[in-house]
Length: 322
Ligand code: BMA
Image 1 (cartoon, rainbow, N blue to C red):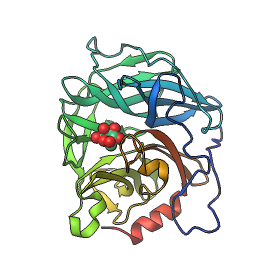
Image 2 (image 1 turned 180 degrees about the vertical axis):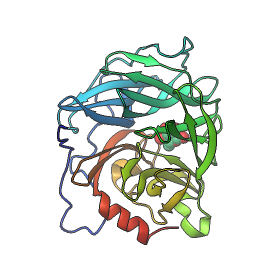
Image 3 (image 1 turned 60 degrees about the vertical axis):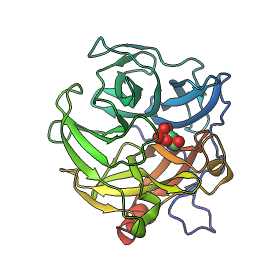
Image 4 (image 1 turned 90 degrees about the horizontal axis):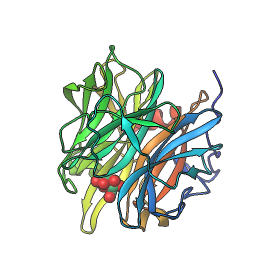
């Protein structure tokens, strides 16, 4: 197998943090393509001898859509100026009022994209591609309202497996992560509760709602799942990133859930933007050496990148678990 050279910077000498930010942050600015108001909450995967991605680009009318992009190094991105045009996949019903917050994963023979799809309110859209040029849209996974649909990178007990967060039609002041299974990427069922919010007095940063982030990473200890947690403050929601380990065979069983956040909005581009105080991870690249590079939307405006070691993250999680 080809070795993946994920983007990487060594841990700064003066930090004891488990996660550290890329010195080039934000790696994608809000006006990276001519039409964009903001580019954030986006997903990337290894592709050919570099990387491909699906980017959330809100245009200057604030229409939310997803665009394909390509990169040699995972940091400098060529993002298509026009949104992805979907063809029919496993359905003829490919209506979509908007598309946002994509995730991307390679399973078996193709890349699958999930996103928040506007169909009488937000629900989870699914599409596949082989080349990031033609995309085939499939049946929505769920009834509205739902957000943060995140696939596992392999079948579990012969079924596709997806995390999601049932929501409302607005800014959803609640929400736990559920898991659902499908034999064919069309019909989803066996919905189980997986990871919930925390009581305010235990871990307030994740007391309002939680949502899955990047594709879970398989480790010997379980599925490593980065997620966002939200606290309601006097001046609105604050989104931070946490991490959990889920059982390999029955991922609805949460083995550890972080009590402290891993990354919270503290940099100016995370605290200031169209929606202040948001860190929203949607992708993580990892290599055989145990390094991980996490892509996250910052303040609903730009895209940031952060780094860590998987074994250090797991140690942190075990020592800081709810
Ligand atoms: C959520 C989604 C995300 C967004 C976040 C913070 O409900 O809409 O796209 O990043 O709110 O505004």
